[in-house]
Length: 361
Image 1 (tube, rainbow, N blue to C red):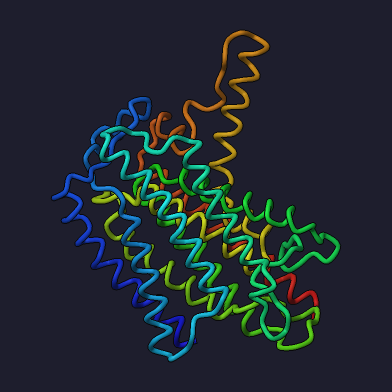
Image 2 (cartoon, rainbow, N blue to C red):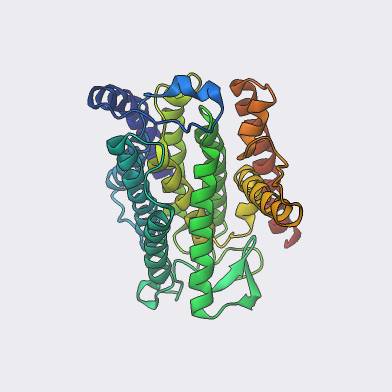
């Protein structure tokens, strides 16, 4: 348990201090954010604010995790290394996207197909390794499972290996893009991530305390390396907390796609490795709502254009946070209220998780 405190605390300090350094360097190098011309006009004042702050989050998390392992003289586990790979890999895709925006001085970076190819490659490598029998522990547990899971594995939903890989791909690409869509207002994605990753840290601590050592039973969890996952969860939580100091309104730096894609990928990784895939839909409910708003907006526009000849919109603008901006809400008000919604989703998810365990006693 000491490693969890080390990981979270070290990542918090590195992120808090490192983000300040990143602001200075990125400002000096001219790594400023380009703003969409079709977005809310209030965002135009943010043009030139340093971006790619996700680099600080990633470095703080990785250094925090490995420092915690070094201080406790404990070797990294297969699950931990896989999650770090997914986290950093998705961050690299986002970094390329951000760098192209900066170098080309435009609001669009990688083409959508190129970005999806990068996300897909990282997701498929992660999925193949997580399900690989080469990474089984002494009890035959692989980091991921071919069974669909909610609060634990659903025994009768045992997927064929290619379908399991497809499900992993869907979660990784889906949630990485969901956090990316949420990252539109100062502090919104970072603050929401603090709560959701904090929740997964608690889930992993609980799974470690109720770990199935040899023979699985209804009241224990057949999850590989839950303690190591808790260390990474604490490290990401701490890193996001430190970053939020500089990203809160008025933001002095943005996380960019470097941060949002890495955080979204890590969320999916936690859900997959903890056997709580469908629980993420509740814990990450804000990300799901914001993504759904984009899908509904596009679907409704195309449907009305096809049948009436004139496309209509349900929201003034998607994602959802921009709809409220155009209604006249202050950005800070939207962010705080969306944080409250995230807190309600997280409380509900943790309550469901704990209630299921209690019901099995």
